[in-house]
Length: 402
Ligand SMILES: O=C(O)C(=O)C[C@H](O)[C@H](O)CO
Ligand SMILES: [Mg+2]
Picture 1 (spheres, protein in one colour):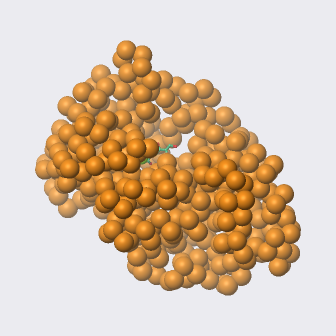
Picture 2 (picture 1 turned 90 degrees about the horizontal axis):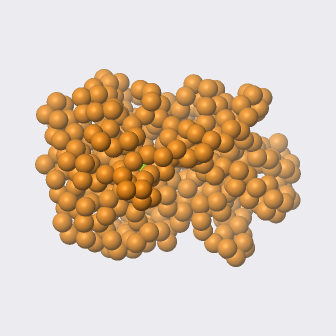
Picture 3 (picture 1 turned 180 degrees about the horizontal axis):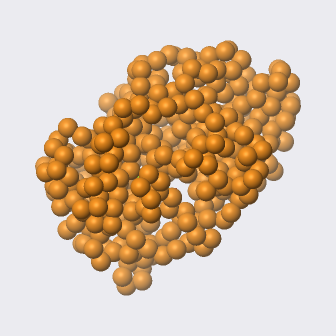
């Protein structure tokens, strides 16, 4: 069996997505997501100019060998562009293998560990009252877990505050827009938000919060400690994780559960965090961390230390990643939770899929493969449109972490 052709499809049904389609001489094809928010075209070139020429004529059934070839063979390892390109190939090949086997992908991974996958939604508002209302709407929709982000008084465009009720897309301008940050103001505000949420909704609903890399380790420890009475499900990306050791300080001071990893590319980004038990949830996902082949290795390492998965699932990860992640979540023994930021109707129409939301859970379908396709004719109606993520400055002009 041979790969006969591969093409990259770029479409923008409200936001940009990069999709790889691999075709074979047996008529079976596979689809993989390669979207890198704000840097999409770099991955298109990596795939078209450097990966696809090497794929033609290869046996698509040799997933592991092709993964190793793309990772080791390039000499230049890791990084978001390389690993997204590898992820797209990997997922397309798993899709092909599962279609050939006539099985939903979770069966190839080892079968179901659970019937459904608990997800968390994104509630946000410009102030505490609006955010509390928004969380209530998610609870009414059946969610068992909700991430809450609120505007912070005196901070311009605080992270996570969207412009719509169900959809939040931060990459919104053809040059990066400037947002603000003030840690002191956030430390005054965030604990009040969660106290109000607990007073309003009690302690049964799982609540989550994303620090989006803004705090220093000391500030992060302080926030984690202040939030302890509110019993969060997790506090995410509370400090940047390039220095994995930084989490030791946070860990020594708080039992608030910690989640990290949506920007990780490989197991090496998470190795010390996992082996020193400095986190509780690993957020690496299919498209970010080299596909199913590599994410499985991260999850297995994490399972040795009772660390559970919590795959990134923002809207810049296409339905192809969501569908594949749901097969992974259905199988992975140390599953924790899955992020679920809803795609718009336009996006869902471009990527027909068989997963569905039911009572706070997503359930993957039973179609052979990962269950997500691309409508190429419809995709062609939405041409690429450059969009950047915002960036952040403190009030004195210093660039900070967005
Ligand atoms: O979903 C999250 O937790 C995020 O932090 C979303 C990111 O800001 C988003 O994926 C950036 O493209
Ligand atoms: Mg996040």
